[in-house]
Length: 111
Image 1 (tube, rainbow, N blue to C red):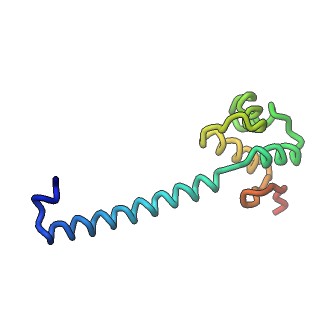
Image 2 (cartoon, rainbow, N blue to C red; image 1 turned 30 degrees about the vertical axis):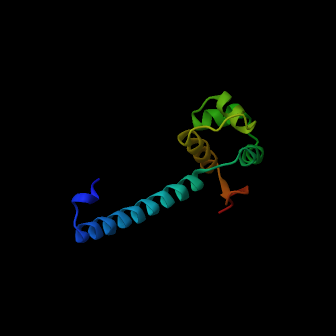
Image 3 (tube, helix red, strand yellow; image 1 turned 60 degrees about the horizontal axis):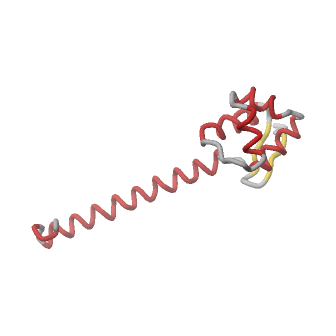
């Protein structure tokens, strides 16, 4: 074992740095989670945003530069697209004036 060659002081330094590293990684994980949540869009939000813009699935696919099948499967809740794909779809909506309200709805941005 590693601890068998460490002195008591070495162990406390090791434990101190390990807990600091763990706290750092916890903050990074929280940041990534918040970033992912910020990028997320539910299938219902996707359908609602398309309805507000009067877009069909092909229009969204073209605006987001993704496949129509990707949009269809996501809205039908048959698959979860990659984060980059989801982000591209969300950016297409936002560029068209859609505002995402937390993780529960959408509205047309009037401002």
